[in-house]
Amino acid sequence: MITIICIIFIVGYAAIALEHPIKINKAATALITGVLCWTVFAIFAQDKHSPSHLLTEYLGEVAGILFFLLGAMTIVELIDAHDGFEVITSRIKTTSKRKLVWIVGFLAFFLSAVLDNLTTTIVLVSLLRIIIPDKKDRLLFAGLVVIAANAGGAWSPIGDVTTTMLWIGGQITAGSIIIQTILPSLVCFLIPAFIISRQVKGDVASMNIEGINKELTSSSRERNIVFWLGIGSLLFVPVFKTVTHLPPYMGILLGLGVMWVITEMIHSEKDEAEKGVLSVNHALRKIDTPSILFFLGILISIAALQASGVLTDLAVAMNNSIGNIKLITLSIGLLSAIVDNVPLVAAAQGMYGLEQYPTGHFFWEFLAYCAGTGGSCLIIGSAAGVAAMGLEKIEFFWYMKKIGWLALIGYLAGAGAFILQHYLMS
Image (cartoon, rainbow, N blue to C red; front, side, top):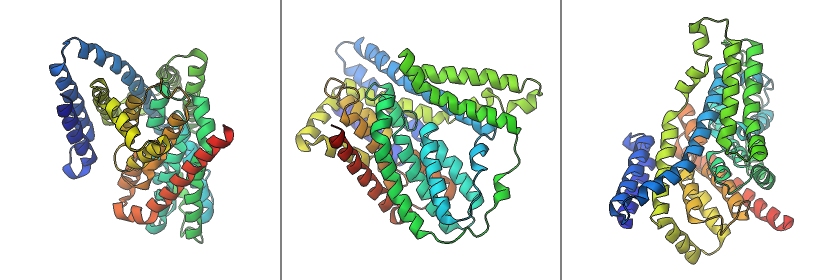
């Protein structure tokens, strides 16, 4: 049974990794893999009712992550529909390339902590296409955005899917992950940003300031209300969880509900056609539903490996062969540049229990940093990198040559800062 489940998972994982060459959406592959793993587990189980009960338990944890992502994605789409990000991007006035490196970098770093690294990358790379006409310079800036967005998402409980998974799973707390991880994440971003700032010189050839202020679909008042309400809703979630001890998805759904009511009130005087694109109904249709289904498929696949005991055996094998938990975590981070970090973190959650490493343990917080930032080493190693690759047609080997080594230096420097900080604080 275990052999068959492992084969199904490996084949499914390979198909996910080769999504673009084989031209099959990874969500479809993940769903098939998840269902087949549980089907084999159910067929070979001695107690025919046990798999169903186990699946129900695991699905409760998975649903918490999916509902959180659903709410967060809808809020971000609603902000974008109202041109809310114009509140930030319209304030960029400088034409100095070096100043732009730091402005764009810090924007990506802090914006991704509130939104997520994927959305931040899409927003800022789209902005770069307007303000930097030179392709060569723009690709460097796009690489910087990938590094900064991934680093920024790692230190926030809502900034990266893997950090959110650890937060919802009870492995980390919102306050602790911010305190322990913000400095290493900053180091991870600052070193590559400094090197890139030395590579660019002069001013942008012909900065298209007018292009930033494109035709807008909402008034200034509507943009400001929806933007700050959306950001407030996202920042409210950790506070809500701390006060009520309810799961994070309850906080995000409350924020979405409040935004739904207020946007309906704002647009109550408009006709249906005008109001349609600015409504939550439209935002729900625009969100990346395949990604949510991908998370569902991959997480139930990992749950099948956990239920069958594969992950426990893998944890024992890694401890025996590598031994050092820091090296294991660093390896997971680098591996996330090759394969998706979501299943890697999900696997780690199944391999190591809270009895072994309790909430807030060094391992979990270091894992959040490594899984969040290690993917920057390759363009295909993170959702942010894939988004930038699609928007700017970045070549795999160009990124490896120009950006990958910078990301690796930043990753290792940040990891060193994390370990040093841990010893000093301990």
